[in-house]
Image 1 (cartoon, rainbow, N blue to C red):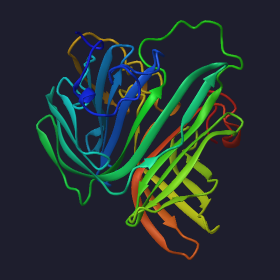
Image 2 (cartoon, rainbow, N blue to C red; image 1 turned 45 degrees about the horizontal axis):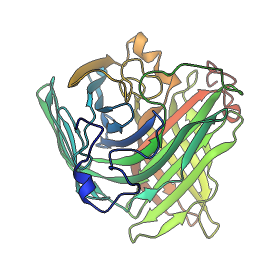
Image 3 (cartoon, rainbow, N blue to C red; image 1 turned 45 degrees about the vertical axis):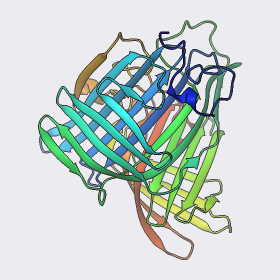
Length: 380
C-alpha cells in the first residue's frame, strides 16, 4: 500500500508502543515530526556546515537540507541545498533524494552522504565523544493549544571525510573537525501555514533562546534555556557528561549574552552556574562565525524553505546567499543564529579548559532582562 498507510522494515523489531505500524504516529496532530539536526566546523571560523533530515507523517512529507556557511577572501556566503519528497515507511534508512543518513552505531556513530547535487557533495562520518544527553521535555502553548511538545537528545562529537563545493574538495580531519547533533520528535509548527483562527490570548511577544552543546577534553556541557519576555524560564536544563559516563546537573545558569552594538547579533556569552558540590563554574563563549538558520535552513519563518511543506515529488534545489547583500543581511538579526563557538570553562579552583561546539542564540521580540522592549529594539 502507498505510504504512509503500511508496514515498514522497523515493524520486524519488538519496538512497538501501539497496536499499529511504526510509521503511524500515536499523535494525530498535523505538526507531529521526527528530525535529526547536526553541525560541523574546523574551529577556524571560516566554514560551518549545518544539516538536518525530518519526517512529517501526518503531512505525508520527508525533507532534508544542507547549509554551508563560508567566510573567504571572496566574501561571506551560505550555500543551501534542499531536498523533499513523499514520505515512505522505511524509518531504518532515512533518505531524501541524494541525501542519506545511516546509523552506523546507535547513539554513537552516523554516516552522512549527499551525492553531488548542483555542485554540493558530502561524505562525512560522525563519532560521538560522549554519551548522549536526554534533555528535559520542551513544551509551549498558545492559549490552550499546545504548539510545541518535543523530546530531544544531544551529543558532541568529531567528523571525518570530505565536503565538496563546486569542485573544491575540503578534507575533514577528525583532529580538527568537531560539532554537535540532536534528535528530536514530537509536535512543532511544520508545513503550510494553518488558518489563523482567533488570536492567542495573550499574544506571542517573543522568546529568548539559548542552546550550547560544548565539547571539552574531559566532558561535554549541554545547556538549553528558553525565557519568556519577562525572563520567566519555561525550559532550564544544563548538564555535564564526563568521559567515564558520570552525569552532573549544573545549577541555575546565569547567562549574559554579549550583542554587537546596534544589533541583536551576539558576539559571545558568559555563563555562570554551580556544580553539584556548590562551587562556581564559569563558561566564556566567543562566536567565530554565525549562520542564521532562518536563511535557507527552514527555521523561524524562513521564506525560502519550510520544513514539512509539500513541494512535489523528488524536489531538489540549490540556493546561494551573499550574506552581505542588504536583502539577506536585514533578515539575520531577527531569527535564531547558529555560531561556531570557542569556549573556556573555568572551575572554582582556577582550572581552565578550552572547548568547542555550537553557540545557538535567538533574541526574538521583547525580552526585559536584555533590554529589548519590542520586536525592533536593538542593543545599545
